[in-house]
Every structure is written in C-alpha cells, then in structure tokens.
Amino acid sequence: MTKTEVIVIGAGAAGLFCATEAGKRGRKVIVFDHAKRLGGKILMSGGGRCNFTNTYTSHENFLSQNPHFCKSALSQYTQWDFISLVNEYGIKHHEKTLGQLFCDDSAKDIVDLLLAECKKANVDIKNRTEIIGIEYVDNRYVVNTSQGVFSSESLVIATGGLSMPKLGATPFGYRVAEQFGLPIIPTKAALVPFTLQEHDKAVIGELSGISVDANASCNNTNFNESILFTHRGLSGPAVLQISSFWDPGQEVEFDLFPNADLLQDLLEQQQSNPEIQLSTALGKHYSKRFVQAAIPYFELDNKPLKQYNAKQLQSAADAFTQWRIKPNGTEGYRTAEVTLGGVDTDYVSSKNMQVKDQEGLFFIGEVLDVTGWLGGYNFQWAWSSGWAAGQVA
Ligand code: FDA
Image (cartoon, rainbow, N blue to C red; front, side):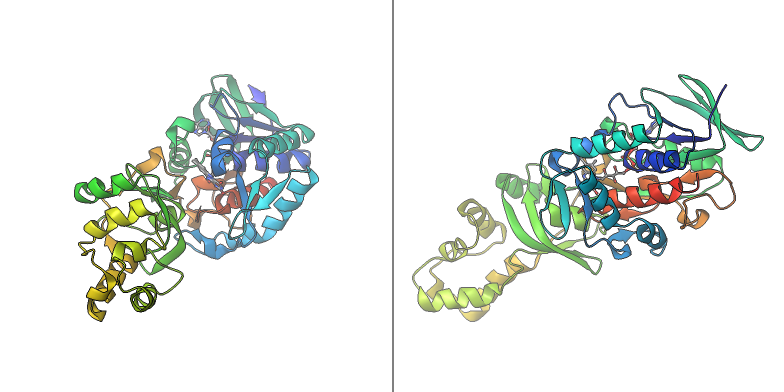
C-alpha cells in the first residue's frame, strides 16, 4: 500500500486547485482521475476560451438549499484572487459581458496554469485511474484503484456533477457521500437548453440559428440576455439561466423586446409610416426570417399599420413581449453545463468543506449542492471551495 497525506479524487477545476493549495503547505498530495485527458471540461468551457470567473461574483449568484453556505469560501478566495493568479501567469483575458472574464487565446491557458501550479507544489497527478473502492480504516482513507492501493489522512472528493457524461462525469461523489452517511439533495440538469412540444418545435425549428435579445422569466426570477432558436428547441444565455429555476410542466415567459417599449414603437411607426405592413415595422428590430415565422406563430394578421386600431397593436406587441411557452423538457445532462443539487451542505463545514462528523473527508466544487449562474460563477466556486479545503486537508 502506498501511503500519502492527501488524496484528491477528480482532477477538474476544484480538485487541481485544492491539490496545489495543500501541496503548497508541504502536504504530500496525489490526485486521481479516470479521464485520459486532464481538464476536459475546462478545455470545452466558454466556447474554448473558459469563462474562468465573474467580477461581480457574490453569494447571490448561486443556488443551494442553504444560500449562505457558499459565502465563507467565496470571501476567503475571491474572484480578484483568481484574477491575480491569471495575471501572474500573463494570461491575456477580456470581459465579454456582465463581468464575465474569458481567456483571449484559449482555455488551455487555464489548464496549463493549474498543471504548472501542481508541479510547483509537487502534486502527483495520476489520470487514467479507476477508483474501485474507498474504506476508512484506523483513521485513514484507503483508496483501492486500478493503479494499486493508496492510503491517506485526508480524502478530497472533487468528482463534479452529472453533466456531460462524455467528458467523464459520474455519480461517484454522491456514492461516496452516501457511504459516509451524507444525504444528497436531488439532482437536476441545469444551465441546459429547453426542448419543445411538437407544435412549437414545428415552427421554432425553422428559426434555427437566430438569436434575439430577451428577458426570460419563471418562478419570480428573470434574466435579460439573449435566446437562441435551435433545431432542437431553445438555447442561448437567457434560456440556460432560466432553466436552473424552471420545473417541469411550468411555463416560461419571454419578453422578446426587453430594452424598449414595442407598443410605443409600433404606434410611432403607425404615425410616420401608416402604409407599411406589420412585418416591415417589426423588421426594423428583428430579422426577416424571424418575423416571417413569428407572425403566423403568434396568429397575427399582417396588414398595413393604418388598419390596426390601438387594441390590435397592443395585442401584436403583447405577442412579442409576453410570449409564454411550456417547454417539453430539457436536453438533460447530455448538454447541461452544470448539475443542480448534490451533497447536502448541512453536513459540510462552510469554512473548509470538511464533513462535520468525518474528520479528513472533504467535498468541493460541483459535487456539492452549490450551483452558479451562467457567467464564470461555477469556476469561481471550484476555485474558492478548492482553496478553502486546500488550507486544511
Ligand atoms: P469537474 O467536472 O470539472 O471535474 C470532475 C473530475 O472528476 C473530472 O475530471 C472527471 O473526469 C473526474 N471524475 C468523475 N468521476 C470520476 C470517477 N468515478 N473516478 C475518477 N475520476 C472521476 N463554468 C464556468 O464557470 N464558466 C464556463 O465557461 C463554463 N463552461 C462550461 C462549458 C461546458 C460544456 C460545461 C459542461 C460546463 C461549463 N462550466 C462552466 C461549468 C464548469 O465546467 C463546472 O462547474 C466545473 O468544471 C466544476 O468543477 P469540478 O472540479 O467540481 O468538477
């Protein structure tokens, strides 16, 4: 049996970051991962440019049964700390929108940063390693792997959630939690595109590739970003964001003219250009293809503006600004960016991620019931929770 001080299972964002912090304290750290390629999710993230944090990060950007849980770690290691580290490595980056920081060149810069930090801290990373079982014997964690049996004083579980199984996601972390008596808050795919009912899909499929600004709302929450029509349904930032708050069977409302008053605009166009058709008036704001599909979908007449009375124009505007649709479901874990739910945080110290009644066992990152909005918050949670555990593991 190989003895070490800290074993981290999962070489993703949280696991690698935690390993470097523990290693920097002089702890002997081994990280296991079953994946062939390290940092697979990071490499795919942010369209290949990794949205590695958000300058506006606060606990309000996270969903959890205990909304206060994430506060301590986020304040111990902040977005500014990670930005300093990125700057130390000379990684060029930019703010895309709403405080979201992306690499200028490639997400590989972030993976390289993590691997360089691990190297500096003498962390031993063993990928392509299957975990066969874990036991707790004489105050040590005995981890049976495809590369032999290892034991440690501390065991950090950083195996993430269920999203994107093709990138190596498994429910492993939840099974370890259950083994040690920790409950799991039911999981659900989040930051995920909606699929549509057949009658909506027939029309919306035609709009594939079109993106429009929208305010999406559901369950008293709303996001003003953009939506993207796809051949499978609805995607784009506003849809991904609201999917985390949506429950099956519910309607989502979209205001497809979120930044101005559409009725006012149509009334003004009616005054200035009474002969133009509704489609032409709407074409000032939307693509022709979108307008051509939307008018029949919303069951509107396409007539010269002068033929509409105020009530009819109001109905036309309402169709675009109060579009209510009941998704059929979501695309599920196959394409979801994150997993809602996870290891119940009531059983874990918010200060250092250690299980309250099980010394030396830690859960960090997405495996916990802490889920960020879209926009770099999930990586910030990985850094902050990994850092917090790395100070004591
Ligand atoms: P993560 O999933 O990163 O790592 C878990 C590791 O554990 C993996 O390496 C896996 O192979 C390993 N593992 C799992 N089961 C195992 C087992 N049984 N045995 C051994 N190893 C095992 N967030 C963000 O903030 N900005 C962004 O731009 C994006 N973009 C993005 C794009 C896409 C396509 C996805 C799928 C996700 C994002 N995210 C994101 C979310 C972000 O990637 C995610 O929240 C973090 O990677 C979570 O970090 P963790 O380290 O907790 O898990």
